[in-house]
Image: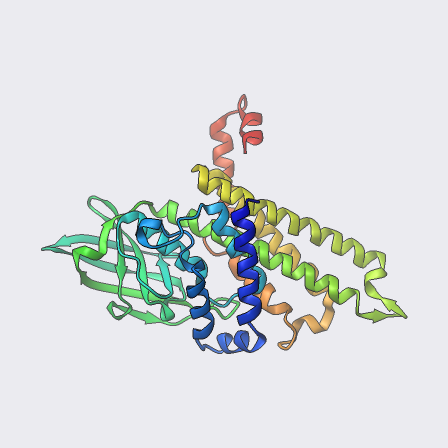
Length: 349
């Protein structure tokens, strides 16, 4: 890792340790916005890590910014940090003003928006499902199709109607609908198309998954070394040690996938992001299953912290594309390379 990455990791770890507590998690899962935690994150500058410097951000490369989300995944951060990073990055590249406060992006799952010029402004309409943290967003960044190509719009929350929903981790995933006229100053040609937006989201979730898998591994190792059965810690039993070894393999693979996703974004190679999200999703499922198996009944209790990571992993592995979707992308790229260039295709990645 670079010196910048090391500094960012240390800053994020210290920030979350100081401001993120069990009570914060419980309140967030009950629907309370963690305002003090968000204020600390925003003050640190981490939310603007990928926003271009000309737009008031740090202008970091993806490889550095994803380190922050890796730490956030380990901390089970109940905030739209990834979404705000992506939104600031896109708004800055599009030449639009980056709104203060938490931001989100849409569509992140199903749905679509259409835009057309209307006088001096723009008419935009459509619906998107499972928009992350929409109810708490100070601004929504929408990607819409127009006759001239994809456009990016910064929408005020008052301009949309919202139906609340949640994912498996009790994080807000809302359905938004819009049919409104926007000023020309908040709409611009988009620097990415729908596939590009999906890749950004997939890379961000890969980083978060890698962090959460590492948390599960740390928690499980601690548990099996303190839980005594038949007169000795269960971590001394060979079967448990084998389970931990497999879990550690998946954690290492997820961390490697994080690096692959960063390389894919920085180098503009979509197939790397596809491979990274697919592998991270596999690690999410396997690591969560092993962690719950090792913990037994206590792992299913609300009081114990295991579920805050495992439920996020179950949700995140499907967001911005599941393993099957991204594996098809890798498969199509391999077929396109052809038999003669397959080895080159694999080793270049």
